[in-house]
Amino acid sequence: MLAQGISEEIKKKFIAIVSQENYEDTQTSRLVYSYDATPNYQALPEAVISPRNTREVSEVLKICNEHRIPVVPRGSGTNLCGGTCPVEGGIVLLFKHMNKILEIDEANLTITVQPGVLTGQIIQAVEARGLFYPPDPGSMKISTIAGNINENAGGLRGLKYGVTRDYVIGLETVLPNGDIIRTGGKLAKDVAGYDFTRLFVGSEGTLCVVTEAILKLLPLPETKRTGLALFRDLESAAMAVSKIIANKIIPATLEFLDNATIRVVEDYVKIGLPVHAEAILLIEQDGPPEIVERDMAKITEICMQENAFSVEVAKTEQEAEALRMARRTALSALARLAPTTILEDATVPRSEIARMVKSITEIAGKYNLTICTFGHAGDGNLHPTCPTDIRNREEMDRVEKAFEEIFARAIELGGTITGEHGVGIMKAPYLEMKLGKEGVAAMRAVKAALDPNNIMNPGKIFAGDSRNRVVVSR
Image 1 (cartoon, rainbow, N blue to C red):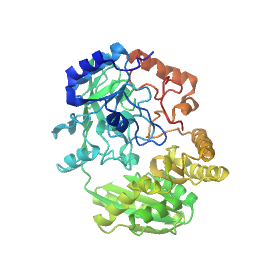
Image 2 (image 1 turned 180 degrees about the vertical axis):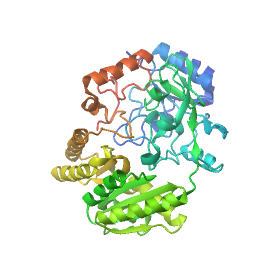
Image 3 (image 1 turned 45 degrees about the vertical axis):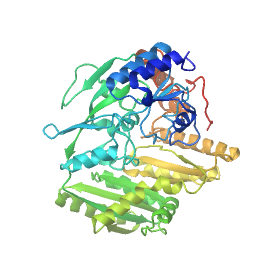
Image 4 (image 1 turned 120 degrees about the horizontal axis):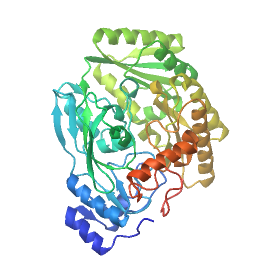
């Protein structure tokens, strides 16, 4: 069993390591870190600790492991799966001191960073040198790189460039027993033993604490063009996505918004989005100018064949940026509709997008709910979003049943319960639906081997794993 409470003796040990100013246990401090961006979950930690370096992280974890004190590594708390809600109490680890870009290596096309660096800072720093870090989660201006690594964050450019895992080539991590290990490095090839780098990326803080990361960079694309395709029905837009990919065109961005989302976003940003369209596709291509022009012309042709009534390409970068920002504000705009916003990310193969969109609409009608759908249509990652009210228990029950059917339908179509948000608390009840009992057992075996005392972010990923939650149940 995990220990409950931090004694004065243990508190003094923590303070001796990180100093008094980096140990907080006031009611206010604990409350601030009792929740994240996920609605409906909250639990108080017993303390908040801000280490200044890897050695301090190691020493803190040794104490936690000895006394079985839960540890929750936390970035900016922007995750949407309850991943940084401290459901077992214990300590929250913050990385406000470990927030530096350590090196940009232009010879090897890498950047080495500490865990608390903001994703947007990385993108800006490398682009100033003509380089490119592609992962661009919607929260990139405020999310930290270690948070992205823990959740294997995606983004608008995931279709062409992949997700965070595809750019993490080396890590420094601290294991639950305090051991410090390095994985990977500035290498194009490395098959020396198990690939711990890829194991740790997306492990949601349940296996280790990331204290440093080496990220792969690319040359900055020469040019990019952004367009908007308008459709009279959802199915035509979804079919256009499948046909674009089938024509062997991989856009940098291929985003989908339904009419409900369009109207809410336009009311929020007021940039002239076409509120009469039933669906829009935000399309961006980058690369050499001649290839970009060719691809955008072909994409326009395909969209018109699939019943688009308008396809326009932004004439200036200002217009293009306005369109991108409109898409990135979708969640913020939808959050204005109701006291509670449930944002999910059911994901299917690209060829099944049309059927998945239709199923979401049918399920919303079945349960008499408003579900707005937007997302990364090019990689099959849709975000059905339901404005609701946590205080309305009857409606919340319908929301729960609706999303369970949405997940089941995604799996039936060859998809998954989460494409980028992670499992955390929110998706834990559905993990077996995707992996089966045997798959979950194999994952538990890995967890037990590296964290036998279950101190690392307990209560996450595995349903029923948490024992002493103070959680507002979803």
